[in-house]
Image (spheres, rainbow, N blue to C red):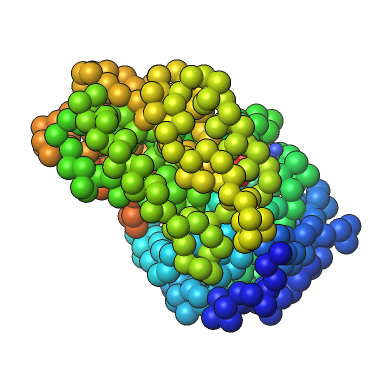
Length: 496
Ligand code: NAD
């Protein structure tokens, strides 16, 4: 087994020096779980235990919501530009500590490094909107009256994030509600809570008042229901699987609050007959091996013009063959899967693909021997001859598994691209601007990229899904408005 001494010192950050082991943040104080129970956090590349965090439950949720409710009037009533300044200071600290944030995420979810990370710029973009959230003046029948709208925050918001990219996902989801004057109870995934805890510590150091950001660690099954059904929670922001998102909506409905959902994907890479393959192929390979395919925006379905199919498959094989796989500190293209459960899931889908009659054209096995025995490594994998409707073509595998489906006509390409329950992101590869526009208008997805990588867009680009990929948008200039409620105010003379 790899031990911590095998890891080059430049990649070592001891989580215990950054965080107080066994505590989470409630009302500005780092405290253990009310029960005293803890959960172990493991490094997917070495299986070593790297930290312990509180195993929170209802009592912790109650305390965190009470803290968020107590902090709400202060945060709501402070001048918006002060909120913006504090969030900018948080961004500055995230930039100064980018290395620690990156290594914590590498340690807890095994992802290879991608510094410089997008955390600070994504906070700054939204922080700059703090003093630009405004209502409007309204027409009145009576000229001696004036009517206008105010944008009020809601109060404490529950923000639930997944394990697959806590450093990138979390600030983008909390900064919108915060800038609008709401307070937060954050629930990271039990598997990857350290980056989120460290982000909260930096927010505290930035001077964001106690209780504005609270973090409760623990499992979804133990914290989820008490948090989402808590009467003090006024809105929910959930990022995770479509199945859990559906459950979150049911729970939120018990006290009539909505949930903004950012869910799974099965995103198409549409390769039209005139595509520039030299450009497309490296992007397609990166789009499925990035984060070991454990990405909501993974470009997992290649939808290719039949005349290009053989060429594309050969080029993809060559591209996948060059992918390096290993622990993050070797700077590989692809790291391990998160854990054994993920490996079972991915290998299970590979078996399903073979049973369904697709051709396993590349990979398909677990990597073993040496460093690979320390983590759950599965080869980059590609199925060809995949027919629309096969489970491997329809369901989110959440691993490095690419499917290739061919089409004869462009209408068929659109049907296949739109033919799953999901609609998160998509890419179209074509040299023809007319075709690009045709597809951009018709693809059912929150983001259509033309001749560029999939992904959740960039800073300022709205991010969110169509269909079973969820609803609501984050990251864009109008996103903070999702976290406000419109209040109309009418005043002036009344004539009897
Ligand atoms: P998950 O749904 O299992 O868990 C997500 C979060 O919900 C975790 O914090 C988990 O502890 C919590 N949770 C689980 N059960 C809960 C319950 N009953 N009540 C409340 N919270 C509960 O998802 P995951 O496996 O952590 O993440 C992978 C999924 O997330 C994939 O489907 C991926 O596509 C999706 N995702 C989507 C986006 C996006 O922006 N659309 C981004 C990242 C990941």
